[in-house]
Image 1 (spheres, rainbow, N blue to C red):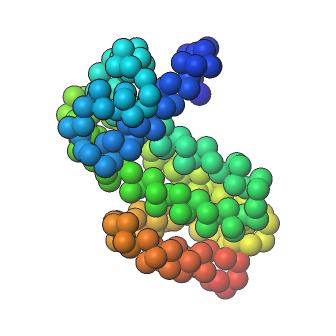
Image 2: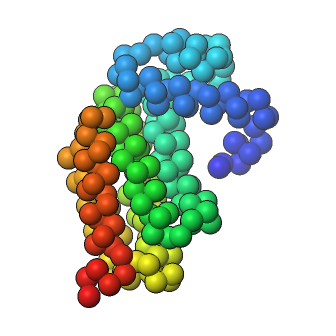
Length: 191
């Protein structure tokens, strides 16, 4: 959270979060051409509130994508505190698939940001690698997962699963593939 977000009044922060959630949903489901008025209406705020937080469509798309990335990566400590590390990893893998599904749905809108000179993906790889690294380190320390794996390899594998199971009807297959990956991550699997 930036210092500007910390300084934001509680109601303004709530409105921002509502707008970001509505934007992710709208851009993922309706595409890049959804109106900003529709997003504001779905968030339960006026268009002026949207523009106070996001001066352009590109700023909204960029913030919505970064919010999804932060939501995913920031979930790791809570998962590790709530469950054994291997279960935290498997739960986070499901969340990663949801994140990539939203990202895929937002692809046209994200291309608009890139075309305007923005780079919404500037922090993606480093944040995802750090999240995978924290989960893997906790699993290795707890004796539930192998310690000889590189987070970059896991990120590439997860990205492959996400690309292979693009549609909502393929959620069961994604689960089976993630279970297979977990079998390979567990301690003693590669010994």
